[in-house]
Amino acid sequence: MMILRNFFLVLIFAACSLLISGQGYEIKIKINGLSEKQVILGHYLSKSMYPDDTVKLDNKGSGVFEGSKSLPAGMYLIYLPNSSFFEVILGEDQTFSIETDTTDFIKTLSIKGSDENQLFLDFQKYMIILRKQADSLTRLIKTQDDPKVREQFSEKLETINKDRIARIEKINREHPGLFVSAFLNATVDINVPDPPRDDKGGVKDSTWQYYYYRNHYFDNFDFTDARLLRTPLYEDKIMTYLTKVIPQVPDSLIPQVDYLIEKARADSNIFRYMLITLFNHYGKSNIMGMDAVQVHIADKYYIRDSWWSDAKFISDLRDRTEKAKPLLIGRVAPDIELMVIPGEHFRSAASDTALRKYPHVGAKINLSQVKAKYMVLIFWEAECGHCKTIVPELYKIYQKSFRQLDVKILAVSTLFGEDGKVKWVDFVNHHGLYDWMNAWNPYSYEYKLTYDLLTTPQIYILDENKTIIAKKVGPEQVEDIILSLYKK
Image 1 (tube, one colour):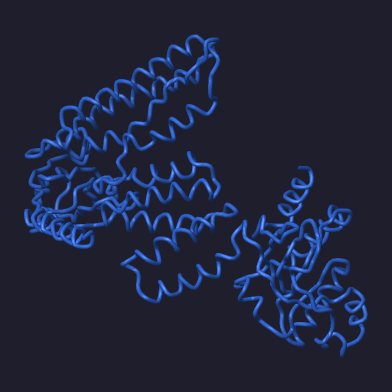
Image 2 (cartoon, rainbow, N blue to C red):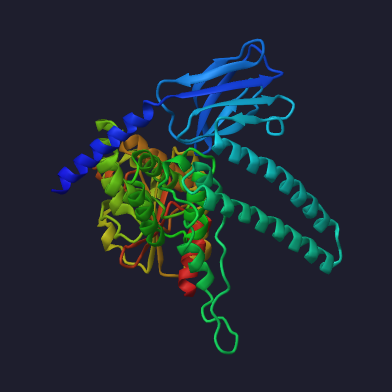
């Protein structure tokens, strides 16, 4: 029954879309001072601009943007050859005319046939006046030494902001369905009231205002409104919420990501944008552990619901996601089999060519068998330029800070064969890396697949249960994390 209901909804939306798109658009434009030049009509998609139409102005600076299908509602730009532009609103009525002058686009701009654009233009001109007043007051505040005078100027600044908000609220009351109302309202930040107090005047809950702001963050900004997606403020609002308002830990972020993506299903364009944007954001994050958020997005949404992706991409993503899951912080590190080679062998091999190449040496051990309160697991290779710096640094930290603690370093060389053995032996001897656990596996590549070792070095910090508590960190971070844990 639900499937049929959804199917009918799709048909209804499709019919509405066809009805709207059949109306077309006709935007007459005249730019005094600009003749026989090509201008572009484009729309925002978050912070980027994409062209929708072009027209070459005649010798009087006139031209017409026109099409048989209406353009999606949102904020559009008239983009000129000198890279300057001005903005217009496209809502339900997309037949109107614009005239302006290159000397000052906003000041000389006139609109005919679009009440919504007239509202937007009036507000822009109003904001120019307010901005001049605010800039003047800001300069005065910076030059004043008297605290009382600074406070007076600050109060005037606050009055200006209240005037702006009052104007926006008036537009919303009088024109509740227009896109310009939704856009202007989205620019208004949440007013956080004073926290509740007890009988003695003390604040009952020091976190009350934070949670109020967090819970009401989207009161003025309906991120499911596809029109707002075609404005320059959309992505900033979403990413500010996720990077500044929500604590930067996966357990806090994942429920919020779910909330945003699920609500975004209200519009296919927003859903696609939201999914791609959040997936890429957490994939590029430099904050340790954020890969858990990307894995969650891929596993729950991207693999299943990204209809725009081709089959190979989805297949590769599924494979990458399955490899990443066991390596997330909080998981028990996958067990692998290695050969640990004692320091004496490296010393002896320094002057023995046959011994340097000989691979069948050492004691077989599983990662799970290594007993230590904390373990640093590093995968590296002697030919890796970054490893040549990182490995000696980590060894110095081991000698300085960890030798007297129950901390073990398991340094795994990922080189293979006789040639790899020679390079490994030479590096260990050159840097004297004898008294930590030097290991490799000359018989199998399986551990490389298990730990998804596409690049080196890679460092993991494990606790006594082999739970991953940190990864992809540098030597200094390794030292800070483990010493901090010991202090606790």
